[in-house]
Image (cartoon, rainbow, N blue to C red):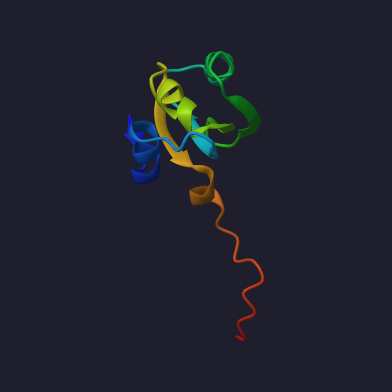
Length: 93
């Protein structure tokens, strides 16, 4: 299973009052709906079903280790890594 560097940091040394949004991708041989149910069984909430067998999940940093310990996960990344929109940077082209 792949864990991004920020996720590994949160798993190993969580900030007690901090919350995080994660993107959890189910393994190819796993059922995303079953994984969503398992995630809801931790102190996490599934916010959205995404493309490519992924779920957007919100939880306290103290629950990241529980989410990462679940079976059927291919990867766990912070939600910000999937936010690729350019935004209002204001560059002139």
